[in-house]
Amino acid sequence: MGEVLAELVRNDVVESQHVGHFVALNSDGSILFSKGDPDQLIYPRSSYKSILASAMVRNGSALEPRLLALTCASHSGLSMHQNGALEILALAGLDQDALRNVKGKPLDDAAALANPEPTRLAMNCSGKHAGMLMGCAVNGWPVESYLDVEHPVQVAFKHELESLSGEKISHTAIDGCGAPLFLISLLGLARAIRALTVSTDPVHQSVVQACRTFPEMVAGPDRMSTIFMKRFPGVFMKSGAESIMVASVPDGRSFAYKVNDGGLRPRLALSIAGLKLLGIEAGDELEKVYGGDEIVGSIRATF
Image (cartoon, rainbow, N blue to C red; front, side):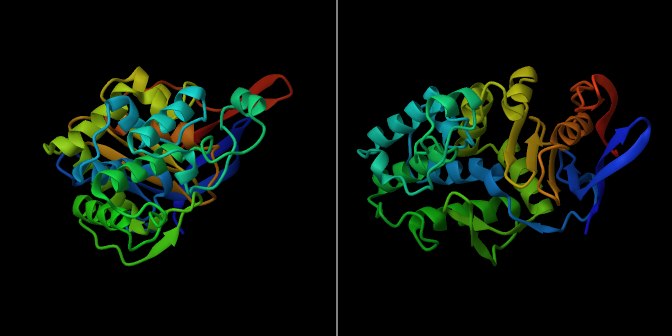
């Protein structure tokens, strides 16, 4: 079931708790710290899009770093994100009608107000799907069936994940965007992100460096992953739905966590605590708890 990772404190009393699993790795891949069960099987959701991007680069997809970062993104749906996805599709000789992800509205509030109708392009995974279609185009793989679990795109992704994590994938689900989703342990996910970070393979180096160089393409200007990557050069960070987060620093120290309730509320506190374990002092900007107009507490990590 996990352990308490974060708690809401109101006027010095713990009011609520968030249970989950957390693991941090040393630069050599050994466990630095854990809470809950590192071997807990989880769906990584969007946190491992960089591994899918690596699989596409390995299979001949050549994108400039700005667009490569977008293929790793859970983007905010801003113009730069939607236009970037269109650029990738154009390079593949396709248009947005080729996208098979579900429709969605921009995650950015202002963009959502300006674009009230959900579209496939605005959906936060459109960069990932455009990247998969680019992989199809350069290899002559079927376009219409790119979301099938036996499609070469998904087989390549699975192989890349197994290689980096050291685990065999035995169960496949369907992610919210419609793409296959591979079940893996939290420790396996952390190991995969660590391996990606320290790899001397030019494929992996290009993906990680693209995200570090263009963090606004990975999420958005006001999003936590983007903010931390911009504030601390060398940090790689990527979120996933249902309260998944991964991060690493250049020497390979890494963390991954999963909050059981899937909520966003404890992510800032947990990410700051996780970065501290990796040697990054990210400050004490915890979520504030209010009583009327007065700050009466905060949401804090338990480690």
